[in-house]
Image (cartoon, rainbow over all chains, first blue to last red; front, side, top):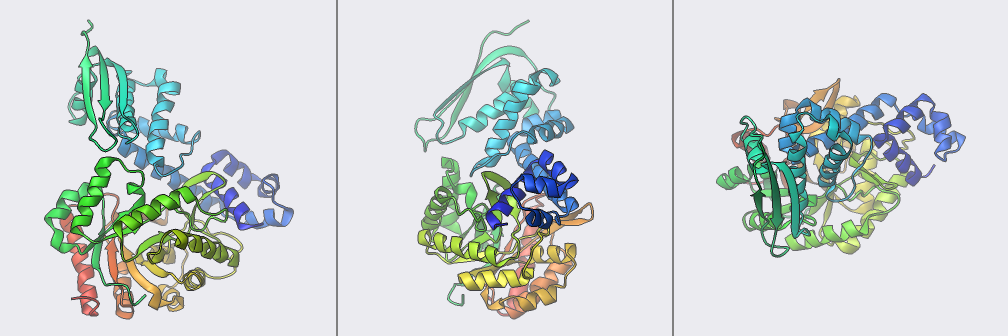
Length: 198
Length: 276
């Protein structure tokens, strides 16, 4: 078994929990399924399930830590629920590249928006999350203009959560705009509020 | 490695203590920056880098070049890294002896290599390629590992030695990683050190980790334990190290605590006349 093949299998074992469980249930058969011959599969079967599982968990915890820092407001509101959602999401996606933590946070936000929206309580958390996600996207140097609408007075909501106060949840449609004049200029941001709803 | 300049006591730069750092500039001789934070960076990160470079010598520390990848290096990433290193013009830069990517999967952490001749070959080949882009000396860091890979043809210390000698690189000895591996894999630190080419050690890293489910983790999250201080003393007594860097990432304490650790490391360097 060459190093390239070993590394490809290890990378999958470290990051894919379904494959990992299958492999440690029957390392010989799954090894052969992954393209190893019988001797090679036998060699890889010497891996410690406990060590690999521990490493895999630490990778996910590290991802959670990074994403929590990038979505601090959503985390402060959801608390433990944030981690529970993240464990579910982390099974579905592995970020890559120089900005993988940023990509991870954006993909996690999309996961919640698309698949968990109905189960998030209180519902205004989804707006808060979309606001944080938009900030992350707008902060990219390649982004010149980002526009996003919200059902709530998002600036007040975000500010009160950030200051650890009771969240001000006011049903007031708002449009948030982020822009920069050139790739090296500072990001500007403002929120336009429409009418307040009763 | 003797031609490299002595930098003294450094700190791994982290954004949350930027203000404190500038208030206590005289306590830090140089900074180590995480290279990835400044690749494709937004304008404010570029400005931050320029500000840091105006006040401190900067050593770029890369974490995702994946020098041990048998499928070769990501040249797009390498080009960006080379541009950053050229911009900073440091006396040396560092990466880890590990792989972080394979088969399109970015593992997200430093993963151990099997201690085999093939892995040594791969590392040397990749380092050769890196040198075509970067002519600043490269020093290589030992990592911690939770997973013991089957099929080893040599010990970890022999593997590190083979890699740095064959590739003609310096060694960034992370003494916390060494301590953690010795605890988790039950080996003797003294024996390990006796097998290393000590003359290749350029820089040290140190910090404290924490225990999780009976395993010591290199979380960079706690103050430096006494075993690591003792190890630092032992290494600095033998080796004319050029720099020692405190690498704290998690659970950041008040800056005074970091300063106290830097001062302790400085005293050790002074004791063996590594710097004034």
